[in-house]
Every structure is written in C-alpha cells, then in structure tokens.
Image (cartoon, rainbow, N blue to C red):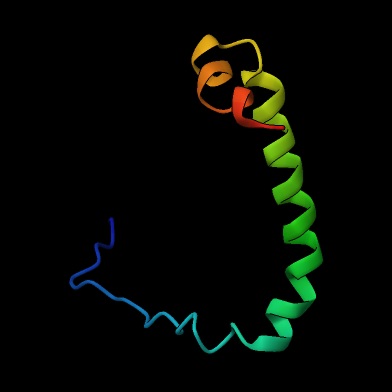
Length: 62
C-alpha cells in the first residue's frame, strides 16, 4: 500500500541578512573586483566589432 502525505510540511528559511555582515563583504571585495573587471573586459572584447557600440561608446574614449 502507498503512503500519501496528508498535509504540506514546510520549514522556515533563515534570513539572508543575518549572514551578510561588513567583514564578510570585505573578505569578498577583491574577488568581486576581479570578476567585475573581467566581465567589463569581456563585454568590451565581444562588442568592439558592433557598429552601434563603436559609435556610442568607443568613439568617446580618449
């Protein structure tokens, strides 16, 4: 015989804000800067051949 669940059971989710503190943010900051810079470099690499980006952004870079 199959046993069915008669009611929905749920757990409370712990708050995310209790885990995000200033020391935690400071420890991840170099990593975020590195990946953010890599992301900007990647976007620049893949969009340098697009005329819209050339006219809008890359002409204004000294």
